[in-house]
Image (tube, rainbow, N blue to C red):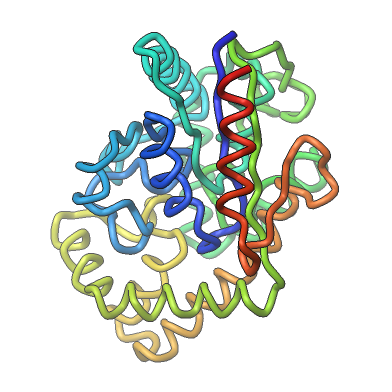
Length: 305
């Protein structure tokens, strides 16, 4: 039976660091499950693995599309299944790593993605409302139509909100009811990393300060100069949106950084809706404790079954 190790948890908890070590120890390769790291040229603000890390261990599904290109869940799932199968066929261990719950559970639960083609006219009409500052009202519409989907989608993830509205409209039933499941072609071990909220927020704040120091503002400037506007879902994500407000003179850089931290803290609460500490499928580990040897033993037993 083919095996997959998934490493999940909130942002800045240390998933990528652990994945690198396990990949080295168990002859593994890493498959990205972060919905923002699929975009090219968006490196610092998405905390994408460095080039040296990507050279050390093979990473897959990074830099898949340009920031102005659509990238659906169905596209991700299809590519991820092919990549994971290829890794396993070469006798290696596949590690699915990321904090995007939609991507992770689509793979681990074998979601059958609704066969609903994009409706460009309807989608563009919703995007026009977003540019007028109506993103919040779109989310409220989704909450009325499909409260289950609304609970699982981050209100700031405009692309996901629009897709859920689009699917519900064209299929004439709620988006959440279309998500059927079938057994995936692998058995999985799900490792969850967590920490006390105060420690997690501290780690997030340190990471964001480092992003700014590493050149986040310049990264956003380059993207803007290449023609990528802030109405794009990619450019309206955490970090890029706030720096954009600074570049347009709406807020100070200090205020932008504080807003990034605040929105990242709020993202954590949303991620724990996807990865619940009560979920018995996930083996949770507190990163404030000595956990690596126990995790290695767990992975070794799983890989050698």
